[in-house]
Image (cartoon, rainbow, N blue to C red; front, side, top):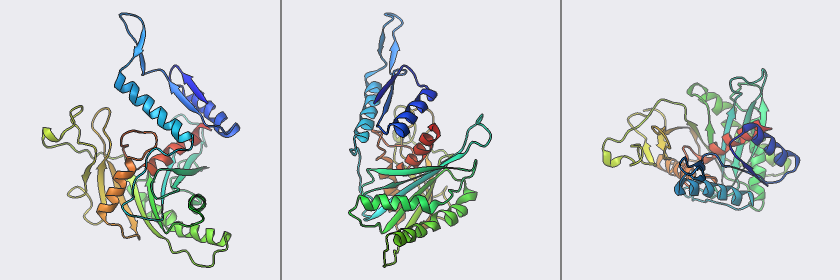
Length: 317
């Protein structure tokens, strides 16, 4: 079902998605006119706002349609990692003006192959303003089941986890209450499916932060984008301004539409897989270019982005 709107309307969008997703279980797309068609003051006729802009918009719509028809838009190689389950997680909180007691929404998504081309997920409400995901092992167990169904009953041997939206003083809590519960999910899966051999899982966990005040500027004009003087997409900073004790890096993978581009800050809190710094950076770069609804790179790793979008969809219901 395609819904054509003259302009964006969050109430209409939420009601439409609630009906199509939960009540009728059908795929749906919303298309808006505003911003793509402008009125010519001289002729008083509605015209395209620009071929490039309109082409980009309908390119994104076409990618959404292809995805909803069960196809895959982008794939990549994850630096040679095989049998890896890529997880993304986020929690969104009620905004200003929300009703008292409005819950937070937690979401976890997981890949179903080794190419990062398709992710499935779950979301649940939890107490308001609570950042750590409750019953995290339940979400992971669901993602293990989905991965196994798409891989002829096999199980992943490694887990790569991207966690979005936590501050630096919550890193330890995420490590203890989320990352360290991933093996528990595999144990629960083994018990339910009566597997005799213990599952030995190695996990690498990366926290991605977007809300910070760090910005980077090119030193030479030849190193700047022509349109906005930002650094080129793919700019990586992993020394000098990073921690001397831990493994972290800044990565700008997108071309900012307006203003100064804000790089994402990635912090590795656990690395049982033993992936090198260069490999983690390469995987992150590749995942930023596999976001299913974009023809260009997005601002942070797509698994965390999907989790954020799933939280927003849950808010519509």
